Amino acid sequence: MDNVKLSALEELGQRAQLAETELAQLGTAVRNDGLLKMADALVSHQAAILEANQADLATADGLKASFVDRLTLDADRIAAMAEGMRQVAQLDDPLGQVDRMWQNAAGLTIAQERVPLGVIGIIFEARPNVTADAAALCFKSGNAVLLRGGKEAILTNIAISDALRSALLEMGLDKNAIQLVQDTSHETAAEMMGLTEYLDVLIPRGGRGLIQRVVREASVPVIETGAGNCHIYVDQAADLKMATDITVNAKVQRPSVCNSAEKLVIHSAVAQTYLPVIAAALRENHVELRGDERARAIVSDMVVATAEDWDEEYNDLIMAVKVVDSEDAAIAHINAHNTKHSEAIITDSYEAGRKFQRRIDAACVYINASTRFTDGFEYGFGAEIGISTQKLHARGPMGLHELTSTKYLLSGDGQIRH
Image 1 (cartoon, rainbow, N blue to C red):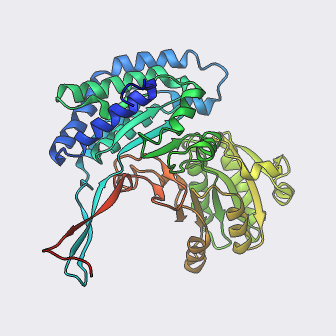
Image 2: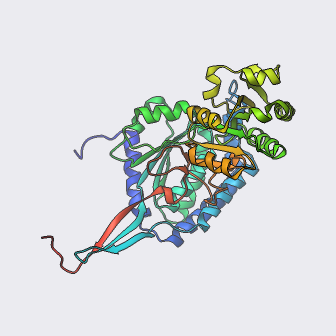
């Protein structure tokens, strides 16, 4: 068995396992210092990172504007990535935390303690900030990470990972705690999905197509993340000025990301007077509106919304509009078409707000606030590995705590089981 030649990806996995063994034993202070050094390295390597990013952008012809926006880095975005690492360094260390402790009938002391997941694989698309965010969170939580980005950002990802690894090397730590898969072929992605001997969990980040492919094809356990068909529901008891401010923010501030709002659902009691107002506000921000029959009866020059629109994540300045006769109808529509990510109700009714939060099936449910807040940084996590839209292990923004598992530590004084 020792003579079997490993593939290039298996060699990365093997090195990651060795690095994780060392990383999990490092104290909090060492891991925090490593994060600060990596943050500094991002800034000091800024010129090389931006040069690589420009080379990637030069080959981005024909891609959607929203896709190019996710790919693009500048000095401010690099500074934000570095700041995210520094924030992670300031967060409480989850490793070694005892969730609970008790003594059983036999007198054994049983403690449930936080430990790393192990080696985490991440397959993602054209958002090079994921390289830094994922590295920071995995490093702090004692996990080694194997990153595989898309071909559109490969040069940028190489430059970022080289900067981070140089900081670890400078500290005398194993640089293989952070590794980038530089082969961006579909074949290598498929191999990574089956790397059960080396990967403990696989996290896809990107569009629905990528996520569903990984969920469908991977034999490594998967945490499903990301796709965001998010809704704003304007209730009959809404403060309509607030509704406009929130809807415009949720749609326009950064339409290319998964927590931007894609759909607007309006109660019929306010639709006749409110829909022209919100339509004008959105159009002032260059949003294309697609309406159902009732919405178009009020604002006639909307594009006709098709059945496919209700399930579409646009990641663009497009929004579909639906008019409903009750909160129950809004909830039913949203639950039928959402991706379990983030949903919001605008209402001055406490009862309507609580009903919405209880009955909507999503990771994050807001009353009177923008869906754009679904973000690890905004939740105080420093950064996030992704937004989990499933229910097992983790749900919502995945910070340090969500990148750990537990083990049971048992202590006795000679007990045997009878």
